[in-house]
Amino acid sequence: MFYNNLRTASLTKFDPRATRYTAAHTLDLYTEVASICRPPIHEIGMPLTKTHTSSTGYMISVYKVFEGDDREKFERNWLYWTGARMIYRYLPAAAGLRRISLHKSLSPKGDKMYILMCECANLLNDVTVCALILPALRARLTGYTGIFRPLQTF
Image (tube, rainbow, N blue to C red; front, top):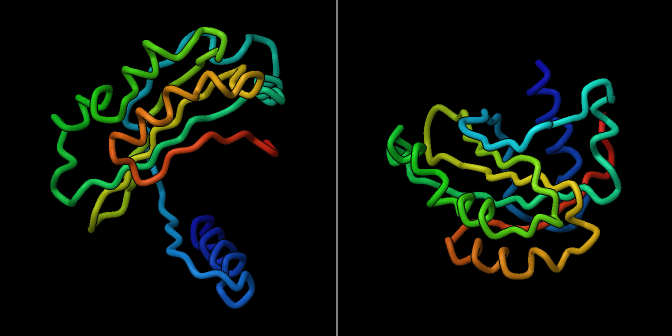
């Protein structure tokens, strides 16, 4: 029910007749298949909303994998093919890396989508720390790669 309502609202919001722009929009459910966390994920006794500050930022990459290629052995090597290992090793400590997670689409048929999310506590204080990392992620032939910041948490 929630998913159907969300899908309807999204398709209405991005209707080409309303936006006067046509693009292929994908809406899918995802599950986390792997993650690396630097403790603590959030401070004990502090509400979760306080962990996201104005300098919190995310590096997000989207990968499309052909149907049938998303096997367990493939997912075990996620640190290499997504570039997560490179991010973990070479992202400066000043960025405040908190978590790297890989999410897989739950669609039963068709090509699979993977999303790599890297949460950094201080990424937006100095965005240039990503200047060398983002081109290296793009070289991995991702569908989309970018830096984002949360506008609203709920």
